[in-house]
Image 1 (cartoon, rainbow, N blue to C red):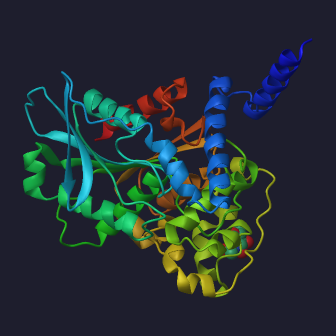
Image 2: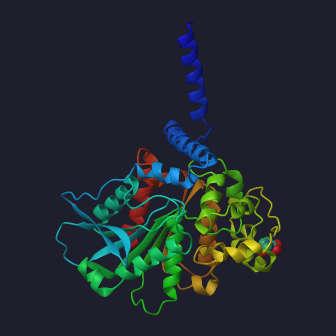
Image 3: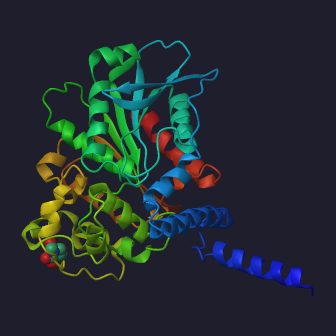
Length: 399
Ligand SMILES: *[C@@H]1O[C@H](CO)[C@@H](O)[C@H](O)[C@H]1NC(C)=O
């Protein structure tokens, strides 16, 4: 063998080693998922390298790679797609062109991306919005919000909340031909976190007369007290959301000070004086037996109160919707929760299902056994359309 072929062989083996990862047997199209994962890993490694060199924040690199997938707002025969601002927050609006007999239903959608990246313009979110608008003959508002590390909590929350309140004004609903009694708020991942948070907040706002009919939370992250639930333990290296990445973006939501990330990684960031909050996220009692499996619940280890004094956001109910008490949850409308098995935040969704049901809220829970976090973000995969269809089907029946 010549030197060239030896080199080729070595490169081939290295690439295969980099791309290959063992996945659970029931995951569909495993090689496609591995390739997507390899792309993610590459930008993570690149980001870490550039950060070590001191050139810029790791998040900036990741945000840049993600933004390559942005598409412009393009109308077609069926939909008119435009961009505007709601209360200074940029939004993308999808309105069916067909003449309507009556005012339409509407979905207010909040994109994911760990509070740090993504936008309504990403190809997959554009697709989610188009499908929703077309299949339901509904108006879709896909909102943006300012991102970390340039903006921290509560900016992300407030941008979404302000945009939603603007949308819920009677004259705005009329302008877009929306029926005020048929509005849903939805979001995936960190967008599901923001969706759950804003709809809770609306309950306390007497100025907003219009009530949302339903909410849909798609593999949401809902708490930052405990990073060692069974799903966090079992799937910490599962694509497309590793625990290390999750803890990094979560801490960036509150601060760029890396000491919060460090404390979160060792699950010792909550001070003893907040111990009463653990009952809201106690997976020992809130998680169904089949998801607890052999995991043993340990009494939380508390950290110093310095971090929570400096960055109280991570204990704020507007960031951790699971911290709302039952009297608050009771006011929530019919809820759809999508959880996927191979997902570190799976247990957040599962615990919210239990807590909502305990409070008397009607919940449709869809658990996808072969799903992974970010399934809606990879339109090359069959599972994206399967999950999307199930969600849209639920909206068709309930909105
Ligand atoms: C969690 O729930 C278990 C079982 O119900 C209970 O024994 C334990 O004291 C709870 N821990 C906390 C911190 O709430």
